[in-house]
Length: 64
Image 1 (cartoon, rainbow, N blue to C red):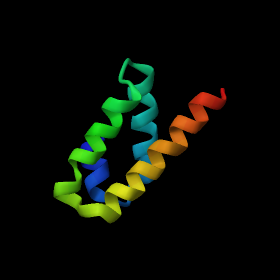
Image 2: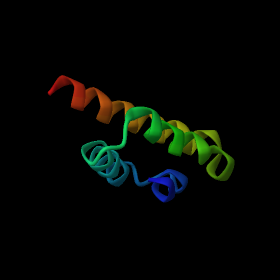
Image 3: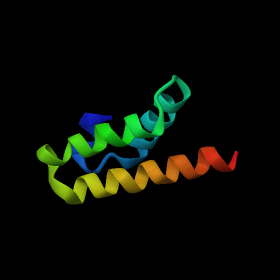
Image 4: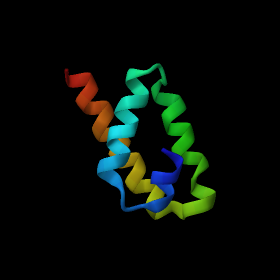
């Protein structure tokens, strides 16, 4: 997830990894922490896209 966050353009792949992490025991706060830690490497635009992708996945999981 960290590498995909820093890339900034791999949002479909990032969503797959976020969902996979959720399914294998990572909780929401752990996933968000990974993304926010990457702000130092990719700056806010890429991290913002990653946070929005994470929110999409969290919304999808909660609606099912």
